[in-house]
Length: 115
Image (cartoon, rainbow, N blue to C red; front, top):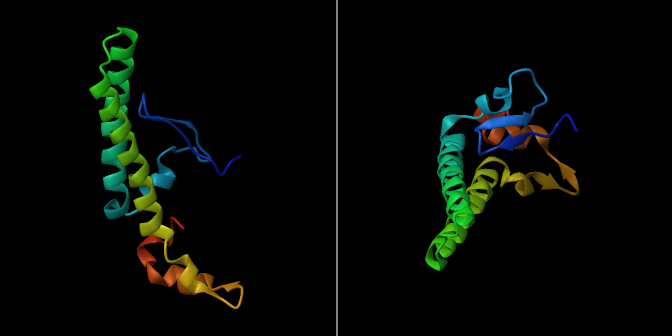
């Protein structure tokens, strides 16, 4: 399980990281790929905290719950967008059942350390 990152978005920290520097894997992703996802995660973390607090106080309105679900769907879409942007073209590099690893990595050389 040393290839898995567990993130605590409530506390903006890593629970489990395969390296001594928990941000090492994230730091090698170029900002144009990771920054939009980071913004979504931060926004979602704030929303989750606010929603949990309102729920505990029994003040959560139906419209707030609808908005919460919508915002969470945007977060999910953000992860999909990230993965499509980083590895979405892998299928173009499968020929006769073989994966052209070097061809795929040459497509976006700025992502080579991450991939």
